[in-house]
Length: 371
Image (cartoon, rainbow, N blue to C red; front, side, top):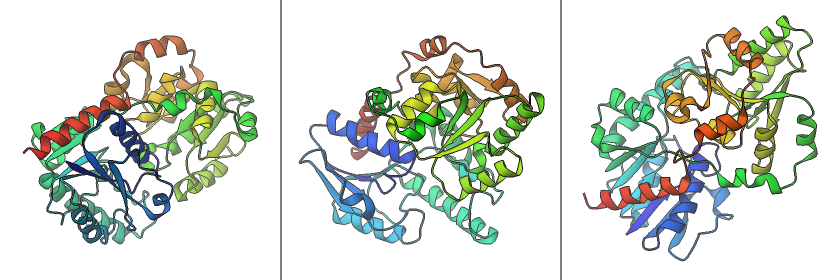
């Protein structure tokens, strides 16, 4: 069997980590099948196929474009894939072959505010409608659907009427490169950041991440105690959304409180997680919440929104807050007398590992090709 993996988002955050770990673990657990990895031009040269059964194909077309709907089906057909894994919500609706989709979240169907795009509002609404139509067709054409949480599975059922038996939940895992990074040296910039106490956030700055409310909570902290020394470290690519957030921090008078770290490598993340006073995740909606798991695996106390997916993934290992209320966020930050060791023990034994994810995914490939 030849399995195709659309890896055009391999260098992106979130989904990129999923793709990298999927490929790495499949190369270990699958000793029989052949694979074709479809890569963007910028990653094509540096990607090394794990072994002789793995091949790579350059796919010079961006995701969420009209062009991909025509180019990717042709590339999949030329590679003669028995099944293709699309690990994101951009199924090629004109592809007639077998495919499996991974849906990480359906956040795009919520929060229709126009703040999650740089496009003019009419174009954004048209593109958003295109996403919905693309997904509606793709979910029905797919042999099977992978959801990264029960919460995401229920979203697929509720919004698209897909039968539950067509959807399998396979949880993501904690990246071993981060937990093993303690042997690596940190950068001078990182050493400067950890001089004082700080609250840590890792992720993008899209509107549903609710970082404006997080900034407002630090205004509450400063008003309550002008001498409060806690910093806020934000880790994420310095894109349009972070630049907009930087302006908001300046307007709120928080330029001396908020540290925009930018991108972080595995060694940086290890150091940031292990030295943070707490990790905070104030999202209004998530599909899984991998950074919170990474933080907990390294003994960092976690404060998260009181939403279903976090209860599903984190159980009793996190502190839950009403993240729509900046004062409630501020109160949680003030009251972070949490035992990191206790929190870590509560999470131990939960099967959140990439190998398990890859094994379940491989089983779905093999089952779906027989349908």
